[in-house]
Length: 138
Image (cartoon, rainbow, N blue to C red; front, side):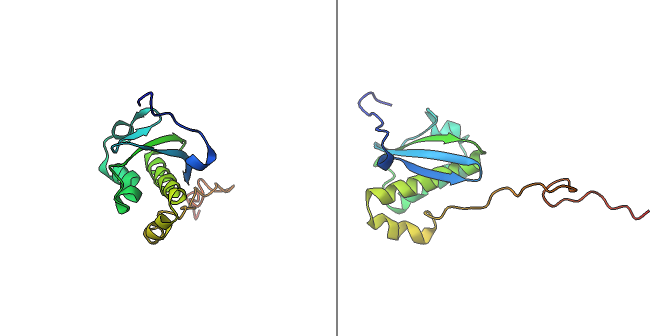
């Protein structure tokens, strides 16, 4: 990142996204379409996987803004899928705070809906959340 571009850590400049165990704090900077995740290139961090990269870029692509902003994200927890989807939610939320008209465009695509599915807890007497030990008749 250039020294001219400083992150301004204010609440209104942060898009917060969550998915499973992942939490992403997202910043949008004026730029030419780069992704930086945890101070690493986005392509390298997401292992050059097109599915993850498309997930992260999709809110900006729907608004035709992919070449106008750089995405800077700080991500914790979970795996790459959850992290990519958390970044997507953070970007979409941040775009809505920047311009209220973006909400009506992004909402039908489901970018503003937090996916609340999380891992089910393990129950006693079972091996996992629902997997029971093998039944023996005799």
